[in-house]
Picture 1 (tube, rainbow, N blue to C red):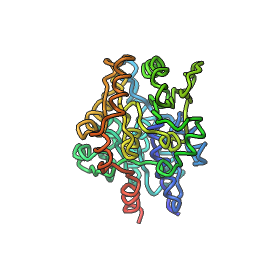
Picture 2 (cartoon, rainbow, N blue to C red):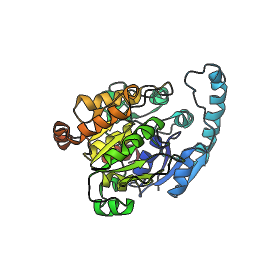
Picture 3 (tube, helix red, strand yellow):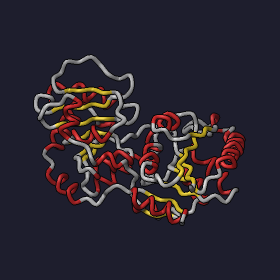
Picture 4 (cartoon, rainbow, N blue to C red):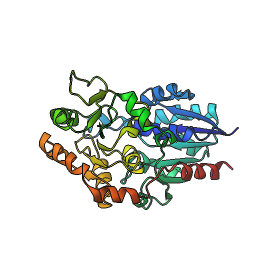
Length: 344
């Protein structure tokens, strides 16, 4: 049985798409390499064999923290290389993040083929660095493929379970009544500014709708507002999406593509602080240019602007029509075809 070694980490957005592909590759021996961060936890929860090594992270805006990176990277590549010699994979699939750099470099030295996938419109630093080591750089957006000599547009990996959940079962599980439901989430760890503002208007909104708020670990608050439900985290976003008549969310590529593929009208509030390279803003601009979402800039976010935008979202017929005609869909089949072309 041929072996595929998956890599990607630092955030759930680099890991869950790999899990989506692994679930459809049962004819191969699928393994995972990464750091002891979120990728190890997710792999253990999904019973995927995991190999750990130390990766080097670039810290944005802090020059002195990055001075030792070249020396640490050499050590990390050697460490990853020893694992590759032990595992002997037939292919490495990299989903992005600094975690992918050492295995990709080590694989190139050993003539192990590498495929990578870029989620955002503007490629991240890690994928730019490993592109020359890859057979192909697969992309979620058509325009991104043009940034690479070996680029190819395939769409976004998504778990099949996102598309097959019962709305009735989902609403019952979360304790939601028959009224329309707005889902609200701000990324894996939540977003304080979104959390704070949605709570300020929850009482008024919940006179007419339900709100299912994924607020992030440790961020729940005491409340008795009828129709307002909080959960810290969900490892079954299919159930969450099944409830949704509308959404308020950040604009990370994975969740944005999922929301649009599921035809859920969404107000995106893209992350635009100094810790971000601006990828969410560009993702949101792309989707808005196709009338597939509404957007609200974070610096303009107040309880009043949020309330007004949610009300506009609910009655935006042009958006709903554009979503009904959208060609954005799960990219798993196209990605798996590229994997099999290399392993045949």
